[in-house]
Amino acid sequence: MTTSMSSPVAPVPPVPRPAEGVWPGLATPPHAPLKARIAEALFRRAVRALPVRVVFPGGERIGAGGPDSPVMRIVAPEAFFHRLGAGSKIGFGEAYMVGDWTSHRPADLLTPFAAQLSTLIPPALQRAFRRVAEARKPAVEANTLDGSRENIHRHYDLSNALFATFLDETMSYSSAWFADGGDDLAAAQLRKIDGVLDMAGVRAGQHVLEIGTGWGALAIRAAQRGARVTTLTISAEQARLAEERIAAAGVSDRVQVLLRDYREAQGGYDAVVSVEMVEAVGVRYWPTYFAALDRLLRPGGRVGLQAITMPHDRMLVSADDYTWISKYVFPGGVIPSVEAIEQNLRDHTGLRIVERRSLGPDYARTLAHWRHTFLDRWDEVAALGFDETFRRMWEFYLAYCEAGFRVGYLDVFQFSFQRR
Image (tube, rainbow, N blue to C red):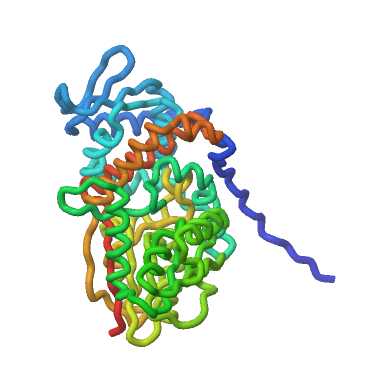
């Protein structure tokens, strides 16, 4: 007789369900006295030279900011520092979500933090703190075929109506590209789409593959150029609304929406386009993703890619970190560096970058538009069933990202790839 022993399966961490107002463990701060004391000392040291004002209950003030500087009000210091000590990359945002700290100008406040993100804490202390206080991404959020669908579902299937409240009429959920002197978001989004299509050389008579449908704006624009489009998404909610929008634009005969992962795509296409999709792929699957671009592209064709990027050194040290963005906004996501994109092209494809443009400052402006519109139309969002915790979560998410693009810690590029 033989016996077998199976290894214990790690428990799956409970995940937030924002559309249902379910926030596991959020209401109760962690209890981490020693880590909280260390976190407070590091926070005070970091803030001392920043152009902000941090105000504690009782009137204590720290920071180098003047009277016009953004103010961070610490409402519940004990809870704030316990959250920060237990995991700074999650706790800082969670503290904002529950009101442990607040600011009337969160993007302005977070900007100086973002500008000095790599030096706020000395590197040696960063490494030590990462070992004892930073979580790693849960295995359950790996971007397998099933895992990707679940990760995408948790964000993009929140509610089409939610996204419609703060996006412009094109329903574009990626960086716009503003013309000099212009501030019309819809016009800037169409300019961005045209920029990607131009990078891929899309023209009449071509068959174009889009990886990542969104709500159909790029597919519609390509079809209006006279191209035939096959567009892939793994979000059922996005697919439904995209098909409605494509029909309303009168191009259903030239656009096919498929609920299909990029790894399942077959055939050959004259051009391939993908806008801010690679960030959801995960480091493990970058070779597969870029190889798919190469495999699906016909000889002589071009790829138009828009990708958020971050500095290579920061990507290397943070790629496995479980952050607030990972937990609440984009599970399974990792932002690549330009170097990582180039390396994957070199090692796994016959493609190379032949043209690029940076839209980083444009993304900061895009996010500011979204944030202001979201807050202005909060009553409409609340009527959809979203609670106050969600409001603070979404405001922090948009402000946090805006700050990163303002200072260049984050960038976004449009690339044109051709075969070597």
